[in-house]
Length: 191
Image 1 (tube, helix red, strand yellow):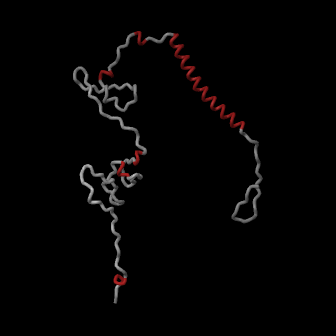
Image 2 (image 1 turned 90 degrees about the vertical axis):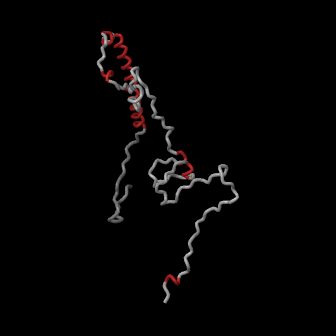
Image 3 (image 1 turned 45 degrees about the vertical axis):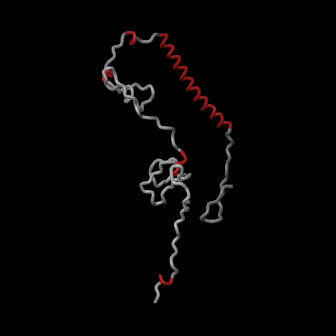
């Protein structure tokens, strides 16, 4: 009695196709380097694409959870350095207000980094005096003109769109609905 394995022809395994390397090429620094290839699917654990050659002129690897930029697509501009120069005051203490406390803040933002910044200011009568009538009237007029310009632009935009909507208005169109008796499960159509 023969088994099923004995009746089948012998199994033929495919050979791994690898390009044969010529032996007459010199090995050394002047020899051309082979293109870097990504590991096979399923064998990429621990491998991270680091250069453009790792992408092999193709797309990213979704199973590798790191930021990838094949062909430099989607990469933002060069990142600015976050290295700060150490500045000190006259007594040799680090000046935090000059650099460290203001990193990442918008330009022109006042940063109070020392206790002296929070001390009350002694302002004179001239600095605390009310503005003159002429200065107040000038400031009021400048503010009024700026607000009128903003409001006027918005009103003009709204007015123009209303006029356009009214000019495109068509007369009402009435449609008579007549049910069809073609079947109980189907609705009729408009005529």
